[in-house]
Image (cartoon, rainbow, N blue to C red; front, side):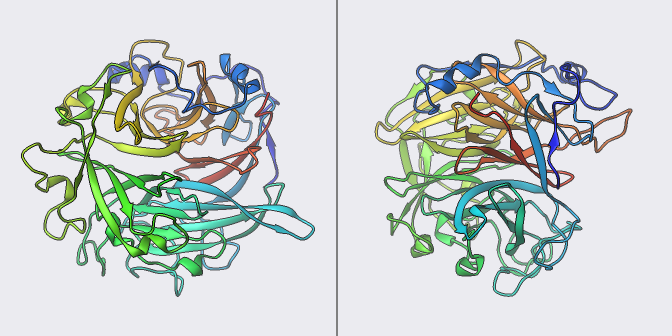
Length: 477
């Protein structure tokens, strides 16, 4: 668990491993490069300091190959491996589960002699076939047949692991989620399997709340009023308490974008159990968001339609009857976050061959609740420099120094990349763990990017082999 510097190699940053290069992979798929286009003033999105605005022109420099073959970073940055799948949890509850996915960092209570603490809550996207499940723990297990869930790490001020334990178990396909303003984590099941399917003893497809400080306070209670569908991520409006939710449906008809109006909008641990109203977004005249290709395209008078059956007892929500006007769908709705006064959500890609209205390599949308306005602010597309990362954006977060950090989940090499306030794209990290062969290399996706409360550390997961990193360096340079 010692820090591994990344500034011991040359400044050149060739792709990790051998075999096919990213350029060759993209050429085969027709995705010759990636561009990003922006719409208007993104000051609500990028909230860094004035000093930070200057770093975005060139990012932090080229990536330096890691001599240990784990994580390539710019010169001056280093990482600490916090946890790897298969190692033993510090709690003694069993091995670290596989498939590290969504994650968030929370401020913990100061510890005498150790200063501040940070809690990390980490999802494990395990299906029924997983060989490294989240260990079942009394009081924290929803369905004994479920192999997904969350683990929680507590770190000291130097990112040393003080504890690591199960936070919730017995859930399924815990993909992403999001933090709440009251300091808990909402973990989302990306499945619609009912009891009796894949051996499950209970219905799945719910959101669960996790207390990072004491998981036994939150237990394993499904927030049923928030809907049963293939959840991906959430974001909470801190003013109104409204929770926005994305649905990552795999087949047409694709997923919907939702909002949940809680009965107890002031929040607090357990408040979402009081119920509320689930609604789906309708963009008048737009049945499929992929049909919109122009950045800056804006739609006023967005409508929210009550979901007829949030529990999807007989019919998945996206197939339910929303009236003569229908409802708006989108392929691969994934990341979701709150910034400024708006909620942002990600469509990782759209493919007409799979039923979408048009093709794209990623979109980021902004919804302004006060104006009831939806705007396409970022489009990823195949028409510029192939050396830039930027295919299939997934988990995403605001960087404390300004701009975004985005996890890539596409073909070829996998990156965490930054988007600056000025619209520049730069590689922040590259996965160097080749899970393929020298002849046919393959790299697992990144997930769960998040920053410590003080902004000094970036935490990120490698999905497979499950690895959690803490990255430190001159973030405010």
